[in-house]
Image (spheres, rainbow, N blue to C red):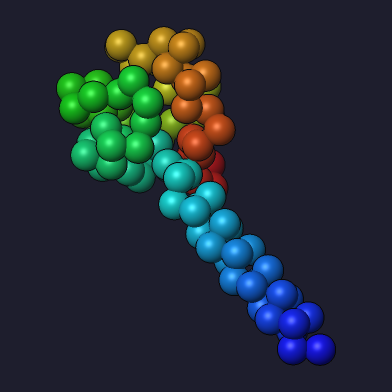
Length: 91
């Protein structure tokens, strides 16, 4: 019986950890600052991350993840390499 309880407990702990990791990897392109974008996104360095923030400040929130390609220097490959981690929040 204790073995079963321990196994269930460990499974629950792993589920909680796994869900936390998934949330930590999600980047909201409408709220993230430049250092976060540069750190979390593949193929996005400091200059491109700042360009994303500048674009957002000038043009407003991104309506979709795909709109990220409207930023100079962000092309389809950058979008595809990061698509699974990108969100636009409640927009």
